[in-house]
Length: 303
Image: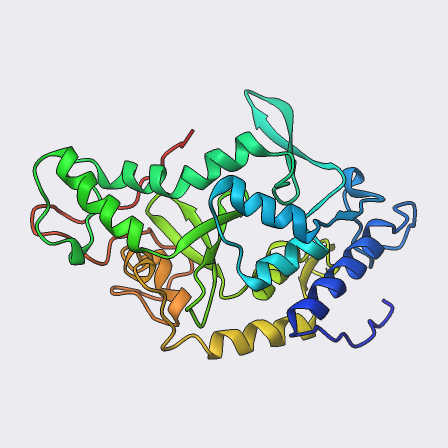
């Protein structure tokens, strides 16, 4: 296997986004015809892809259109990257058949209006679906749970209005948008099962598009006689450093929701109550209101 040249991953956002642009576009232009087994190639739909940035005028107009505010690093991301010039081809199995659908690599703020409008409402809508049932999710800071759905929504809506705003990036990933925060993480929001997917936009992108950044190293398993992938050493070092900095981190309002389920505790460098060290364990509530028993998280099929 050819030895990889030592990699420098920039920390400055502007330098980092240009690094992402150059590295991904180089990866997307790789020939997939080589017989080398120590290379990781891009999917067919991405071959030749290019990023499509936005102008400052387009970014300003988008903020006005949706009544939102992009933070400085988000604006830089939109200017340099934003989205790519083609759709992702997704495959899924249903009743023994392979079906496909298309989606944006990252949301195209100039074209994906219907999807963006839906996603802007996604956190409120899907979290409240977990909150609204009589025995549903209920945060300790909300006090006694009211009997009526209307009163439960009033309390939830007040909490949500005060929480840092979330702007969609891709699928159910959202960047926190609040100027006075030391950390503006990317959240993965699937109803109340909300976690930190990256404590800043740089860490998020390194995790979300690792394959397109060509940051995996193929490793041959002699026992199974096949290749598997692992992070390049430089990326492992970035993630290890980020984990060391987790204790003491906070995010107003959202932290309490993230810690409601055991799945979110590692986001803050914490070990959830009852953790027995098993790799796979059920997602359980870590705060249970007095009027209910602890139950394993059930995932909804949100529309």
